Length: 443
Image 1 (tube, rainbow, N blue to C red):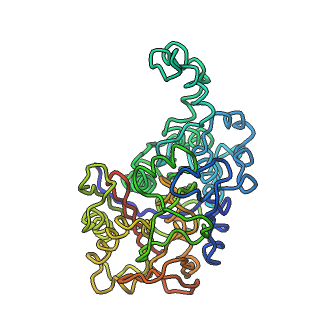
Image 2 (tube, rainbow, N blue to C red; image 1 turned 120 degrees about the horizontal axis):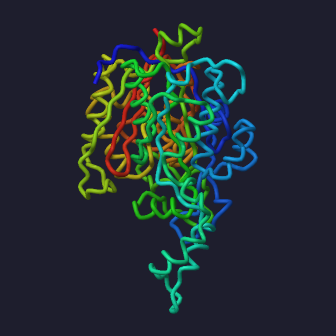
Image 3 (cartoon, rainbow, N blue to C red; image 1 turned 90 degrees about the horizontal axis):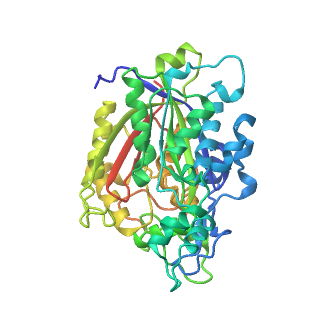
């Protein structure tokens, strides 16, 4: 592999979260200390430990409003995850002031062959009405599912284009078609670490000269029956009582933390070589200074119970610091996963203390899950977009819900001004993959 020789900057950010389309909507809500968590509007989740999710209201996001007319027919084969990626990508590209094929103009800003795309995805949940209708037609004489009838009868009741809605690589597929990104492209499916891993992939592709720019990040919706089931069996869901305030359920690093709730959202960044951005007159928002990744040893082999000492997370953070040529003392704030699941929180806390030592309790922690839930493959990129906004605003958003956290600056507080030069974002995942990135102001 060629050595990294080009500095990589961030010139555009795009998010779709339960607060709406765009980083401004998310940022305002975070600074105001709002939470989007509430009862699910589309499914009855009363059989699960919690009926609460962080869901995007229909009036806040419509994919048809963000795709060019020439691509609107394709929205029929877009799963929710694809919609989120397409919306975030369009927002990021517009934010970066880049003209692509989607703008239907004579010329484009970046030659298609020099524009790459790396998007993290989750295990996309099939729409229940499509799948169960086909399954029902595959029942045997006893009324139970019959695998032989599935092959001869049931599968015929799926639309011929069914698979195109649920393949994880279709997020990047639609984005690259809409914006004509013909450079290196890849899809990474490593649960919650997916989008940061994708950002790291783009950084390497640009750094070694294989592209001048990439659209990179991830998206996922877990506010569905299959997503809820996966989180339930992974012991990630908060157990809530009748009448409990949903906005106060998720409490990262708190002694009484009880778990998380599913969310839906996505984040995409426009990454560019610094020299290429300068050549087109773009003003970078921040620099992607360093990236690191690792694999944790998980005692249960599935990553449900993370390693208690957080060594895998430590490895990723230290790799990112080394890549950036920075010491731990240079980090001014941290955006971790901060899930509110006791074992995951403990591993993250241990990792922060290992890397930062005596400073661990003084570095401000930025927590997002109390506001937007667990957005799966979208988590890391949404966090990266928030980090960029923190640097440009020189401000930390509010924290909510947590009280009594020991050893970390993670308890509830109001938004406040801060002197920020470098922010660490890291995300462990179900499965044990870890990713870390350092985002810093342009020197």
